[in-house]
Amino acid sequence: MATPVGHVLAGLAVYETVAVPRVAEAGPGRALALALLAMVFAVGPDLDFVPGILHGRPALYHQGLSHSLGFAVLVGAVGAAVFRRAGRSYRSVFLVLSLAYASHLVVDLFGPDGREPYGIPLFWPLSSEYFQSPVTPFMMVRHAPGTDAHTAVWIRGVFSWHNVLAIGVEVLLLGPLMLLARRMSRARVDRKAT
Picture (cartoon, rainbow, N blue to C red):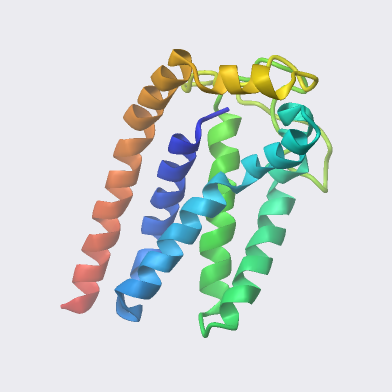
């Protein structure tokens, strides 16, 4: 599992790849709004910590249905419907938001997981099986040793030097990917303009 920094970088890579060629002519304000939404949606699956925090056990619901492609499609559809009211193309916004959300799943799939259930329910609702890649280039992020860990234990785990190092690894692995996506998307926009 990754930190919010890694997830934001992956979401920005999706935005650069999918949205920039489509929103270049929409103006900087709309492009910025969609970029910010892509970052929020890329972190979105980890909002499953919120109900756990309310119960005093932050990891209680973590890595559940919010970490699935089914949920990515659902959340992307709702987000695109909201933006359609603002005059945006449903298809383009749906694609950007669903893929930004799904980028979280891809990053988590390639991160080590130290507590049960191991992995994520990637193909829910078609399957309730949990998946994890055998190749895990990211560091395991520390937050809670189990779903029963109380909030104080979770907070101590989140704010650790280990996680600072994990952020460094994510920046080294995902930063170049995001920059490459940015460079390629800007080149497509420039070619389209000429």
